[in-house]
Image (cartoon, rainbow, N blue to C red; front, side, top):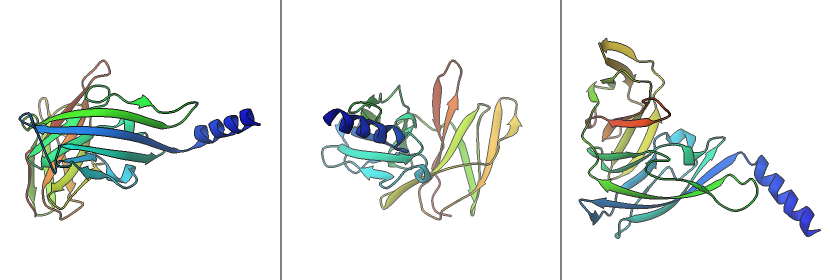
Length: 207
């Protein structure tokens, strides 16, 4: 009977379409623990709440990111003290997920140590009202608009196709999906041999 129960539980886990990542994050700023930093997914629509959490006084936070038919352990994350201080954490480089439990469960866990400030902007973002345009290297990228300020953080994938700006450069035009302050664009780009490169833009205030 116990064996049948175990096999039934394994089958249930195998058919469960919800994936989860239990993340333990530690954020520092110039080596000191950073309170109030956001740890978030890049595409809020792909996650079940919470989509963003903040570090405590010791600069740490634990969160369970959950995705329906999408594994958050395989997706990049953003760590930010604001739209102008952001780091994109890449899976298998900045955090390595390990399976939790037995059998065929869809639960993973990982530890992330993130040091701010992040790299300088490599994307150029300009907005007029709600119309925006971001320019960057001519690479195959997934592009996201992120809204980050003290009151909240959210992200959205951009579906607009890129167009050539000049040799070696491309542009993406889009409409802001939110009037929220603290807009910044992030891109996760393929650079060959299965490697990823993360780029961020300059921040833009409210329209």
